[in-house]
Image (cartoon, rainbow over all chains, first blue to last red; front, side, top):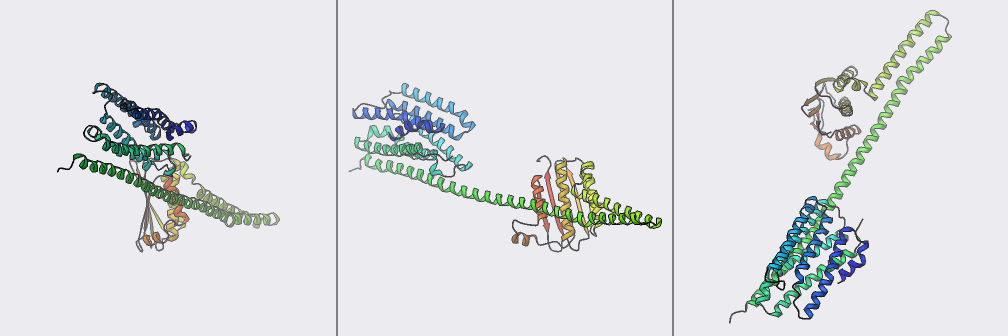
Length: 199
Length: 269
């Protein structure tokens, strides 16, 4: 919520690349609220996951496209995102139903995002343009993403297994860990949106 | 009683997540430390480059000042005093009545003015080698060798294989390098009897070698005592070598002479 509000407040002052991050935070805000509301009402909120996944990956891909400024990446971007969107839509509609958890989508998204982060880290080390990492918004975004998705990858891989074979209490513990990772990620987003990047 | 699968799976899952988070933390930490280290190295490299450029600039300015000083001295001591003598003799010529003395004076004045003209030509050539502009590097080097053989005790041998002339700025740089190396040999190569200059061009590769059989020097000792310096002449050679994008190598040992080699790829400039 803090990241979404930060995005709304700072949107006009942000450089183009970070506007995609602000858009992501703003995009996630109503979905998070709706998902939380449905959870409190004890209603299934898993139908929000494909929308969330598609929006998150698309905006992150655009964010990294403007950050990396790499011609091969920009050429591959529409294809990768397009294929991923088609896959998510097909997997959600053709599968057992939108109310089921779809770990494969999460795993693919995690791997794609980790790939983008790896490209960014490689660029950081090869170009050495950033003098102070702690004042670089994209460093914080990438740190948040690498922490979140490396941790979440395990949860996503075993999520259906957990949901069907283990107790509700154990599932709550696992999803509490996911919430903790999400808080770390959103904190990194908020920090990236608030710090003034060095000129 | 068997352990419930949930109890065995939970530590596995949380350890897996913990391990991944540790790996992520370690990756970020490595990135921060390594990036800072690379930045520090880059800064050191830039500082060293800036220092080197500053030294080269200093060498260029120093060389210019030396050249101005030399020209000033040549004008004052050589041409200036010659013309002053000519003026003095001209004054005596005006005041003399005897025809024979006037003829002698006139002859002396002509000789002195002839010397002045020669000095002016010499000075002019040292400032800008007109023969290079008109006939190219091979003739200019030949002229330089001839002049050195006339004015110095050190014999200069020349061997040229230069079928495809370079541009005038490149030829001028090579000429100046050669001039400086010959000057260095005349000044420092004690006991040398022959200075061999070789200009070779094979395809796109060109090499200029200047080799003497003088006293030589201990290159390693000089490198360690003066790592980034050297005389103004040597630094001005380095500037020109850089301008040509060439490579300079020097081999020497006490009692075994000195060999300087400049190699360049003529397509690179």
